Length: 85
Length: 200
Image 1 (cartoon, helix red, strand yellow):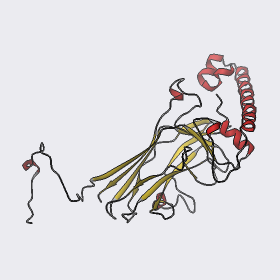
Image 2 (image 1 turned 90 degrees about the horizontal axis):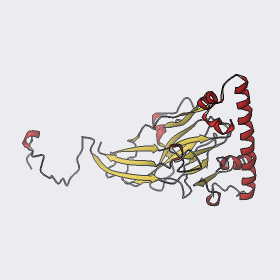
Image 3 (image 1 turned 30 degrees about the vertical axis):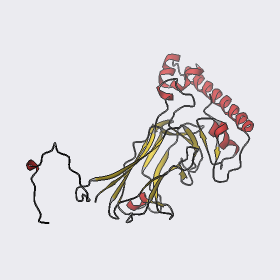
Image 4 (image 1 turned 90 degrees about the vertical axis):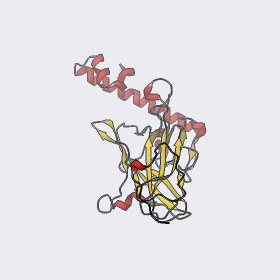
């Protein structure tokens, strides 16, 4: 499951006010008169952010390996990079 | 009725005493209200203005009706988990509590202690602070002590949140991850507001 739902919405409309209960876009509540954004548009942007995040992590891992860190050391220092090793 | 002074050793502590009046002068607990938030949610929070905390079922508020105008209301706010969530990872946020009397307008009770610095606002606690590209968890919120309500009308308290700097982002509450039941980091937890009325 993605952790980029809220960020995807803000990438589309940085002034959007909302709450996403239970990480479920079907339950989203738009606040303060925010114009709703289509679920398909949010999911599309979410995928873009996920891909960008994966690329960023790969770049970071590559840089750390060039510094002669082993994968075990990288995982120990940066647990969030575990899936990019 | 003549006043009788009773020493502690003269009382049978195994007996049950039914007081019908008000106990004052000892900071006695008069009533307690508990409001829980059990769902998990992610909500937007800009760094430009304070945002009501809303789990999706409406603005989170808790109410209490004081029994005396000079009683003390203590508001305890506990987040089982709250953390900024942004694309770049490490950002901060702050929490404050507002109060309204009856159907009046909300005001920042925290500001009873003065502004933060000059014209800046004062919060009650921070959700986190950025530190070397990583999150650094904020400490627990100190209790809010409201001695200025001066009413026996209903009091409503609501927490608000503000995000990092002038940027925008979201906060995740009650769960650190969108997945659940995959380990401690993705455990669903409880957020709770407790209102206590105490005698002055």
